[in-house]
Length: 326
Image 1 (cartoon, rainbow, N blue to C red):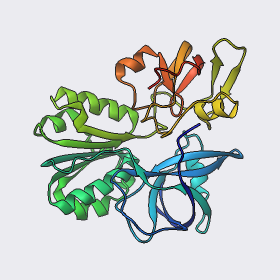
Image 2 (spheres, rainbow, N blue to C red):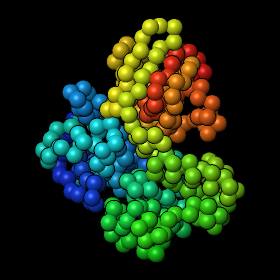
Image 3 (cartoon, helix red, strand yellow):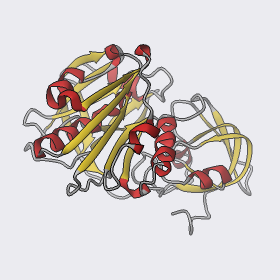
């Protein structure tokens, strides 16, 4: 069960390849007025994986346009199937999507902004860069990629920001030093981040280490990114003989709900914590992929966000103890 969300039919108008393994999709909802949406907005897209309906969430690229909604999808072989589905679509395909919504709160009254993007994490950061550049504030974007050829929207960003765009390309030996970047910022700076989980963990530690308040680091991450490879694992239900297999293409949340073990959820991005369930035992290892729990809570392995987090081996959970799940 979840909170009500509004779905609308749409048409895939066009696609274009931005870099090896990254494709942009222009989607036009049937009822579309081109209204502005908040920075950091995303849409959910209904996809089909192994014949089953699933939902995937994608950040909107850039600010609102009358042409439609833009998303960019990285073709990830180690994914749960969403990117493979999107990449097989051709212009003219019909889609069901949700209206844009954002969980990223931006304080527009700051004097200094630091934008951090890792790989495909540039998608929500591009709109923030456009909005901040238009306001004429002090903004710098640090863009971490394997190589410049892998960097989507690099030319657009260079025109927009000039020398305020700093590209950290690993193949050039210019790795991003978050400690140094954050140490150079004034105390009232606001940082906006989007990147993989390991990079977010490093950003959190560097931000705190530089003496900045943690609420001044605002972030999104990839719901599919973790420290372990995406693989099949098993879930036992406390007090029953039920054991479910969670295939690599599906989330624990989807499998539990499909089997009739109702788990509440909302964002399906590991951000809201509504789907958190109790962990009773771990025979293996949990891969916490959410951004809801603290490092200490993740280390304790007492709860797991069923929408994005995964495991290796078998875990035993209790879906009924919901009172303190959030």
